[in-house]
Length: 100
Image (cartoon, rainbow, N blue to C red; front, side, top):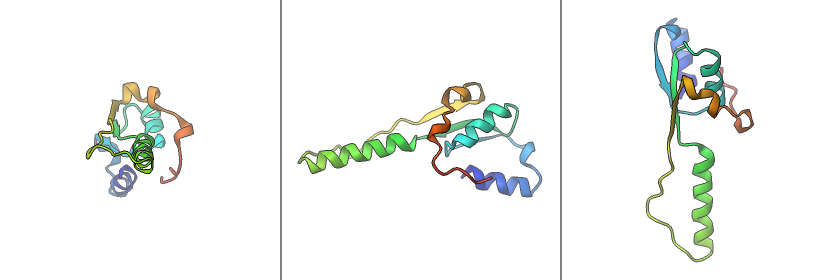
């Protein structure tokens, strides 16, 4: 989502005139927050796809083994600002993140 918003705002010439919170959690956005602490992206939130996938696999394994799962599974959302970006930057988590 953030990549598309950035592309549109850059095309309009206003990318550096706004402040935004990104949702996708791409590592390139985290890196950009670290490299440009006064840039437009000041905070980021994500459900962490790894944790979502892990919860889905755990539910599937319970079902395969004859168990059941709760109707609702809560996967914690992570939210942080520029000041904490370095704590969440992990380039090994980059899967497909090449949109510029």
